[in-house]
Length: 231
Length: 115
Image (cartoon, rainbow over all chains, first blue to last red; front, side, top):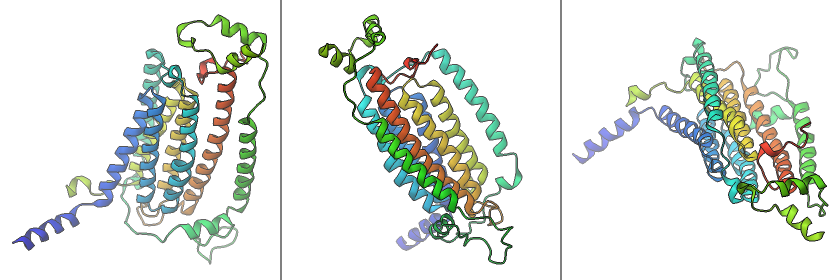
């Protein structure tokens, strides 16, 4: 009797389309978290929802059979870029800056425009018939090796008998360009964010800080405080 | 349960998820006054585009088991991830510089070049 119940539950377990189930799960998390990023004013919560959304996107990449891209999404995006963003939030999180509000009219206008854009995009997404068929469920080979070979210029995923001129090229040159780009960007970011000597403010800045005694900017800026002490 | 969920993952569904993330990112870029919020909007937009690249390049989702884009979609997604990381580093450095000079991250106050 107990065995029968186990068999029935096992067959039910096998009946469920787990790929579709996890797709719906990850898609719902990604979309709802993306909506929460827009709807929240608090920048700390926005960062949290963005992490959720990008993590669920990594799940979608895994489900699409792009396991290397999913891993890179988790490592570079969620592990690197978002940590950078969270550090930025922490470094700039003053109480009056955490929740900057936008006028409601701007929000409504942006919402209407985004809804129109979304309608166009969704209509385009369902406009082509072959896109709507679900896949054969053919599990392809791991993609890390073909990706790595493509980045050094060899396309092992292309058929060998294809003409060299017909075959799609590798990605050696873009790979080099991206590498140099990353190096330049790292140097540039380090240069921009370096610790600077204390700057003597221009008279315009001082006047502006004296003028703006409205309540939302009542906390003195660090630079004006420092420069005020130096003079 | 099976009928409700069967065959739900196709390229079109990935495109819809990507479109929603894209639109959320566009609104985020337009509406947020915090410079870091604008950055998060950019990340969302890039991710929506990435989702489309991966969906078009996926053999698993292709109707005939072999997508025309093949590996190119995944390579492009990889480049987008790398460039997004680079862009976030530079934009964060600029934001911190702006914060050091102006003591705010409100993009509406970044009007020094205003004539």
